[in-house]
Length: 441
Ligand SMILES: CC(C)(COP(=O)(O)OP(=O)(O)OC[C@H]1O[C@@H](n2cnc3c(N)ncnc32)[C@H](O)[C@@H]1OP(=O)(O)O)[C@@H](O)C(=O)NCCC(=O)NCCS
Image 1 (cartoon, protein in one colour):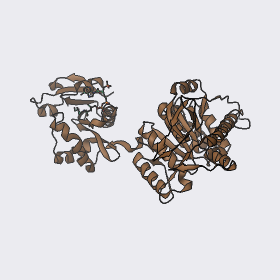
Image 2 (cartoon, helix red, strand yellow):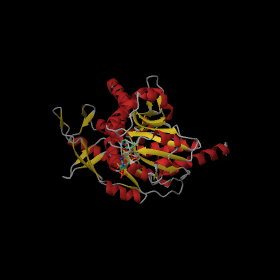
Image 3 (cartoon, protein in one colour):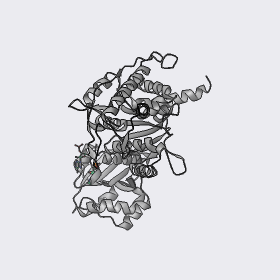
Image 4 (spheres, protein in one colour):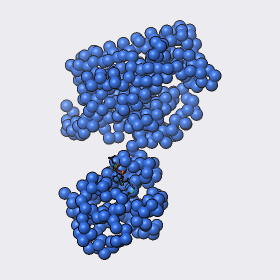
């Protein structure tokens, strides 16, 4: 084998990704264009590989180009409203045949035993069922969308049973109403709602291009929801035909993000190995839309003073934190850590060196909109690690209203006389703060 050392390195490196992905739910959107592409057999192979690595997979296939072709052949002209097909009863008959036949074809390729491939012998079961309840989209702007529908409910419990049994679940762009009607949905809508209902880790959508491109045609590897919205506005305003799949995928990614699906990936169905590269390499192959990347815990800089003041002033006014002037903050900024989220300082904490063995944790504050989600713990962990790296063997804290929070983090109460001498001299008896200490192992 050529480049054996490189291959071995890559294999070792990928183990952390394998562990991270195992038992996680990924919802994968396969648009109709992807099913027709010569690279589809490679995609099937890579999906099988993920299944073998313990990833729980739900596939949602689309059928737009196949439906277009069949309706054209039957000389049925579709009408559209704002890019959405209005499905009448004649069209639905054809759509049911096309979608049914595509689902069977997809099921068939997953049943091939993967002979002549490195996945030969993998035993994979694909499950299908009526897991999507739909409702009519109704009348929009005076236009009746007839049998075009939207997802009303996802039978998450039934899908989860299949995932627990290690089966791949296959869904299409058809849904069923409790009154027994069939509705034509968008595959993006199905994939998004399923990802939300299953609390999926990832929504992965195959698109015709490598990922999202910037104004210079360069691929953008990560997008915050705000920048994804900007790209979507630009794509929609151009109304380019080729960009349609991209606009729908971006809309789906934005909705998934807002409903707590942590990561949505847009990757190419034309590029062999795009799925593996996206999931098992640091830089990935396509574009990731996520809220997460836009929050960082880092050392504070002088530029953060304004944001810090905004965060801590209300807490100072309430007597929770000791007052610090702008000048003092500027002088002490080197002791601070902050969490920045999309340009806003949402949390801070400081570590003041008391003597060579001891540091004081102070001014820990989380913006009220972001409390109780582990950020306080994250900051404390960062401060303790920093203290250890600086050679300290313990940290102390003085607090009036947060004693129990620190007790739960492993601190123990100490007498004022046990504080470092420097701190004892500064102790404000009127404020009457409790003193706590934690040894750093
Ligand atoms: C105290 C504070 C830093 C905790 O940060 P956080 O990110 O909200 O906390 P975490 O998510 O890590 O932990 C949340 C847990 O702490 C508990 N908690 C929050 N404030 C608490 C307090 N004052 N006393 C005891 N427990 C508290 C929450 O109830 C929650 O408990 P749960 O696990 O049972 O749900 C944050 O609430 C804050 O900024 N408070 C105002 C400023 C302040 O008091 N600073 C301390 C100055 S010494």
